[in-house]
Length: 176
Image: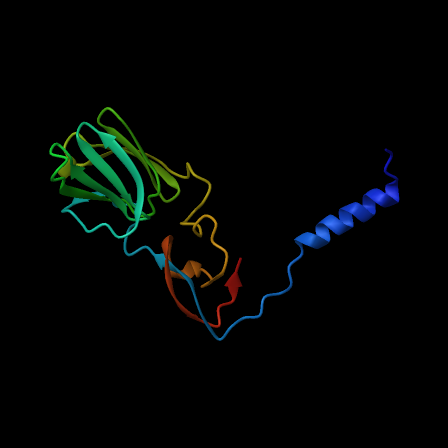
C-alpha cells in the first residue's frame, strides 16, 4: 500500500497532536516536590554513627555486611553475621548518592555528578581514594524517575540540589 505525501503529513500531524498537552492551571496550593539544597560542602564524605533508614534505595551484600542506600544521603552499613539480629554499625554520608558498587575493599558511588572511589577496609573510617569530577551528566539531583506533577522551581543561587522532598507548595510555577 502506497502512502501519498499528504496522507503521510496528515498521519504525522494527527500523531503529534496526541502528544500536545493543554497548559496546566496553576493551583494556589498543592502537594508537590521541593528541592533540598546542600548544607555545606556536598563533596564531603565521612563515616558517621548509625542513622535511621528513612528512604530505602539500593541494597548491596558483601562479606556479611549489608550496604543499604539512603536516597540522596549516603549508605547504611549493617552487620549481618547473625541474620536473626542484624546490627547497624555505621553510615557513610555521601550527598546526592543514588547508586553503589563494590569490588574488594573499594566502594564506587556517585556523589551528585562525581564518581567517588572509597576504601572501605575500615567501615568506621572510610577514605576517599579517587574522585572523577563530572562523570555523570546531571549536575544535581534530578526529579525522581517517573514523577509527574508540580514542583518548586530550582534556584541556583541557593546551591546544589542534593535531593527532593514532598511538601505543600504555594502557586508552584514548575511542573512536568
